[in-house]
Structure formats: structure tokens, C-alpha cells
Image (cartoon, rainbow, N blue to C red; front, side):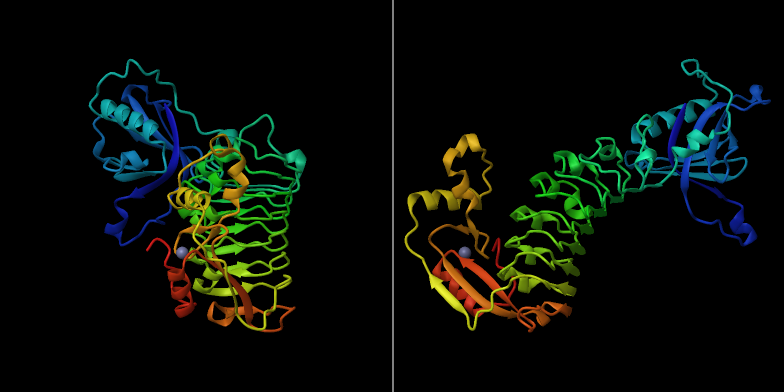
Length: 419
Ligand SMILES: [Zn+2]
């Protein structure tokens, strides 16, 4: 039997010689079988890594001191051998495979016959198998793209540029160790709904593609907390929907050179965001929640911002119609709906304005436009070319007199959404 995992072999004698191990685990292969020339000893465990491609061997029968398997369900375990006195630390293994391996090791240790397992002579890993242990891969030429072979299972960083990719390869979405994915300079039009299966993804570069939107599912699942960097410069995105603000782990967001006419109302809820660039879009205003951001750098250059002389307040508040009341309630309570459910009201619901209280409004609202000081938002700020000032026009839609009063009194205060 054979499994792949992060492996570190620690010599337990090193501390007694006042020496330390390197303390780094690498991708490796663990296999159980017969050691050539030592058939009578019974099964051995062989550990192969790039550094030890020919393998390190550990006799199993009567030779296991202890097995630490408390975190087996997370794919972690440590096996302590008597001779040589080594700890084999296993990490990032498939929990099911690891459990099966530990069961085999226990049986072999106790001298139980492994009749149900065919023990073959252990052979060093081949170059092809070593390739499977690769953690980084960069493809910048169409002819290098793997068609007949699979991507290495343990890839943590994958770059695929200039291959005119139109659709994301479903094999990429199964690389569950992936942390960095760079698909910039391709021809992607859409992202698949299953994108959020990449549960460890921290950096995603989709620069220079043909994207027009990000699907709702993109902002759900593990990506909400795992994604730290998103680069979608040079695409054709017009809107980022409200759920974009669920990407709470974002530190760096690059939206330059798209077709954005507005930003999601709760962008100020991205509490970890430090680096934001939205240059060369079609923004006339930024949403009022923008003032809640606490950025290191901000670039709003190259947008056709309005330049109001003074704050403007247009009060359209009136008793909401039955349709508006129903719409407000449906959206506030996040009731899931489809086109089949609401029919011709779909565009109406899409036209809702988000109030800073977490509620929504349609015709009945107060439109509030004011210039806000961006030096309170970002430590370093690229001036707005059209305005030549550090102020940007902020737009708020308020759903009630109470919300209007609160906003007028606290324009830079924390959003009272979900209060
Ligand atoms: Zn409100």
C-alpha cells in the first residue's frame, strides 16, 4: 500500500548530541512492503522524499514505540520507531488513506499476518512518481499544458498564463492543496459555480481575462475566509454583487481597468482590507460604507467621479407600497428566490438599494450625496485626477427617517448593519 503526504523524519537522538533537525516537512510517499534482501524480517515502511528518493526503511514487526493519532481526522499522525529511533511526522494526508495505513502498521507491529494485503518488494520512487510530489507548477506555453496526464495532486501553487483558457479546467478545481492560483492572461468569460471547492486558496490572480461577473457561489464556502488576495484587473466586470462583501479574509483587492459603475454597498465591511485599487473604472460615487475602511493604500484614479459643491439630500421617503414592503422583507431576511418564484419582479428586486442598517429600499428612500475625506480612509492615497482633492463623493441610500438621522450624526461611524 502507498500514500502521499507531507513527511518529516526526525532523529530522536539529535537533541542528546545538542543538535537540531531541520524541522521542515516535504512531500513524500509512504509505502508498506518487503525490503529487498530482508524478506524474512516481514514488512517494512519505506519513506521516499525528493531528498531521499531511494527511501528510508523502517522495520515494522515489534519496532513501533508509539503511534500518535489524535488528529487522524485532519490527516496528521506521528509514528515513533524504536530502531532507528526516529519520529515519522505525517501531515496533510488523506484521512481515510492514513487510517488504513495506520491499521496496517499496527497489524504488522503485532506480527499479525497481512494476508489480505499483497506485499510487494519496495522499490525507490520513479521520476514520474516524484513529479506527483511537486508543489509548484508554472505553465506559460500552450504546448506544456497537461492534456493526457493529471496535475500533480499536491500542487500548492499553479500558474497557467497565455494558453487562451476559456473555461477553468475541472481538474484544477480538485487540487485541494492549492494556495496560489494564477490564471491571468487567458480568455476566461465565466467562473464555475464549484470554484469555492478550493478550500485553501489564499491568492487568486485572474488579471487580463474576459470576466463580466463573479458568481454568487464564488463568495461563499471556504473562500470567504481563506482568500487574501484577489486580482481581477483588466476584465469587463460591471457590478460586484452585495455578497462580494462576504469575502471577509481579503487583504488585497485589485479591481483596476474594469467597467464598474458602482461598488457593493457594504464594501466597508471588508475589515481586513489594506490595499485597494479601483483605478480606471466608471465610478461616479463610492458607497457611504467606504468611510469604514482602514487602508494602507487606495487608488481611485481615472474614474468619472461627481464633484458636488455641497451635500445633497433628496428625500423620497413615503409610506412604502405593498410591493416595496414585500421586497424589503424578502431581501432583508435573505429569503432565497428564483425567477420562477418572482417572475417579472426579478428586475425590481435587483434594483433595491442597500441601507446602512442592513435593510433595503426601493422608491421610498433618502438619497444622500456628500464629499468624504479619503485621507481618513487610507494612509496613502492616489489623488482623484478629476477632482484634484483628497475628497471623494459618497452616496448613501437610507430607508427611514431614523437611518437618515443616524447617518447625519455619524457619517464616519461604524456601519450599523445587523444592529
Ligand atoms: Zn435603514
